[in-house]
Length: 94
Image (tube, rainbow, N blue to C red; front, side, top):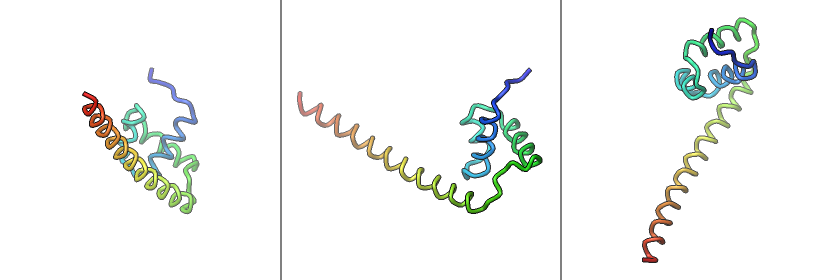
């Protein structure tokens, strides 16, 4: 028998798959589920008509996702810079 997932987890996975802009394979991998499982959940959600249909919400989510990706990139660059600075100052003490 396969794993049983909570409804909230399934709903969030479907929402991510439909609004994040990432591939379904990537989302399934990130969530630790099978791609076929995610596709089944999406199909079931569409049949039940529980999928977000308001394009304004969809557009807003896409914009927010893009903003967070840019912010994440900036934070990674800052972290790398701080690592290099730490190494530089540590080498100056010797």
